[in-house]
Length: 140
Image (cartoon, rainbow, N blue to C red; front, top):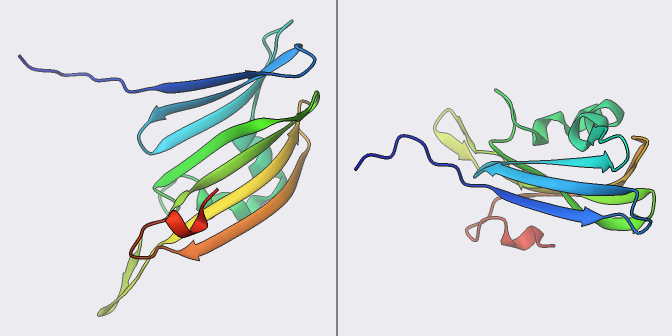
């Protein structure tokens, strides 16, 4: 028997306190997770990461791309009130060989407050080198 396609997915949903929106975090691959806020009446969708990048372009190295983080997860932690969620962008970058030396990658944990209208405010930013224990030191 040959498997030619395997889908591993984890979808997390959470209703807003006023029940007029819900947040969805979709970990559709082992190295990627995206987050959205949906309006229940229109099903309009707000994707959080593009809104975060529009407000904080210096976050780009912590997202997936040719010169960016290979493991990047954008996840809705919880609703802070009926109009805002706390979003977490976390993961790690790969290390780099510089001549004969090797520079380890970085673990990152960035937190944002995002409104249903797409306003973004940074709450915290932690970036530490990957240790021999991986990214455990950065924690929750």
